[in-house]
Image (cartoon, rainbow, N blue to C red):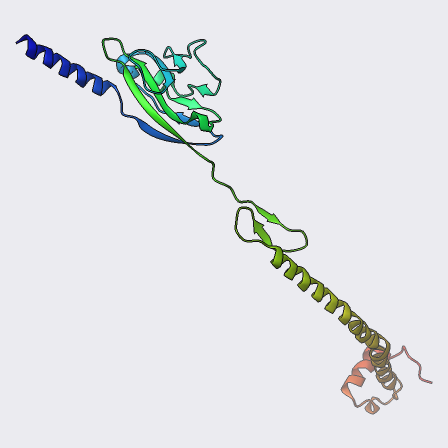
Length: 241
């Protein structure tokens, strides 16, 4: 009978231990970034509890390679091994998650959070496995002077040949524009020297013809445009020779 009681007690003890010790969870952090390892307890049920964080498996008592500890309200003085380890969450709400600042490859591995609950084998144990990954390579556009070609850092495309082609095309366009410039100047100069004076002389001749008509007999002014010029411009303003 006593043997059966002993076996029942051992089974109950194993059940308690299996419930109070949480399975390991995996957290991924970025190199040179910050990462938070979760650990919480029911502060309304248990009240304020002592908590410690360590590296590796959680031993029978305390924390292995302790990193930081708290009395449930603030960090325990002198318990922090580095300022990179912080308890930044709401301790007054039972959130004792560990934040690691500026993580490096050496921070990878298993961490343990032990919440000390009064009573025999009542402590809550949480294991977290931290994996470190390199930060993704960001691509930034860079523009090459003298061209509209954009090359991307980290890609397999090189813009050397494209740049040379664009520069060559720009030189050819500039050369063509320079060669065509004298022709355009000649056309404009011809218009100013020849065509414009001819137009002015024609207009002057028409005005003179209208104004020199016999003003006493407007029947001599048969053309409608000439009559318009006679009344609008010439009358009383131009004397004919």
